[in-house]
Image (cartoon, rainbow, N blue to C red; front, side):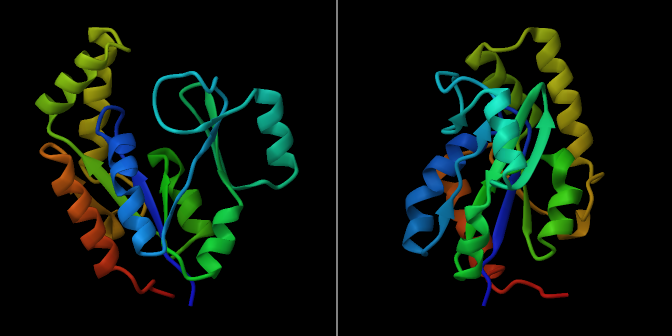
Length: 190
């Protein structure tokens, strides 16, 4: 039986990277995998545990079929290694950091994927974005506006999307994520 692809999405500052890191060991205990994305930015960049490559290297990898999924967003290219197909074939749950804008294509390639939208209350998101200091106040307000749009239910496959609030303690969010995986362990083959 094939494993389940868990496609985690959420606005910048929602805590995706923290959730992924905190879920890594519990997922391993369930024979699961957490994927490191390939991104066209330097490996020294602050943020997720990703593989930083040049645009040329990314394009070469894409042309050679090294990605199961890839997309361009926010001036960067993102790739999910093709290795996930083997993990899924082996029946393992696989967690990836996906893109809301690429969800339709991901659903097309993996119809049984479990889309999870990480949400966070505006005031918590604003505080996190201000604290990390990467964006101006105007950029933060723009991110908050996009967050409201995406959490309003305007995503492909919206009825399938599991919403997971990460406004509180990270340990609680991890427990809820693992519970979602257990409840949705059997992929719907339709």
